[in-house]
Image (tube, rainbow, N blue to C red):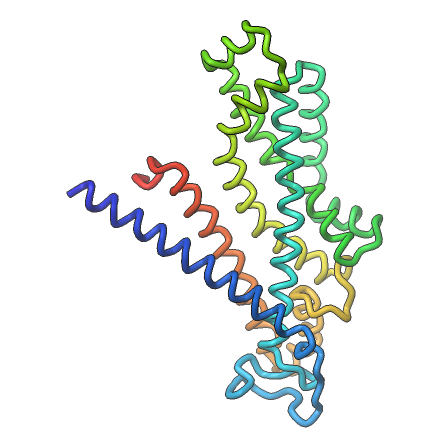
Length: 277
């Protein structure tokens, strides 16, 4: 009976993982096909309430809010994937280096982790984004350079634990180099944690990209990013045009939640014992 329940839980995890991945892939594909449509204006249909054929309504320029939301969300997902990937690689390199290459290297990297984590996240992201010229490049660099410390600290702790393993101690006594031990024995053991950490950085990256853009320090106003859409919608909420902010905001929340579900699902698949939780 217990095995049956465990099997059902695992099936639910796989179904949830598949549906989340299907939705996010669909948003990305739809958004990539809406690049030109998101810019089309038509004053004959401006400020229309949600309904058919404009499910999310239209804005003050007659632009289809569903199309703009899809394009904005796909752009946010793209930025999140790129910046999270860079950030996770930084975390992996520094986390392994901190635990493998001696106390001096560990002290420097630990100090750097504490320094980054000690500065207010959004403030540091804004400073980096502005310093490198804002836009897509600025946001990607800003997010990538501010989201690695937590994963690096986790990887460092995992490597320190792995170093106590008999096979690694034997490799050291056989005279194997630290680089060889890290590449051959440590890195393969870290891949599950790295993949899950990478995916769980995505929602944070998307939220912070939207936040910085909303505040005016991210993407330019001519790009239909979610942050831009929400920022522009604030001017019209007092006039009762609630749909300009509600639907893009809900879409952002759902996307972030699905990325979290995706990360948790992959964690449970890579670590079957966690399905019993």
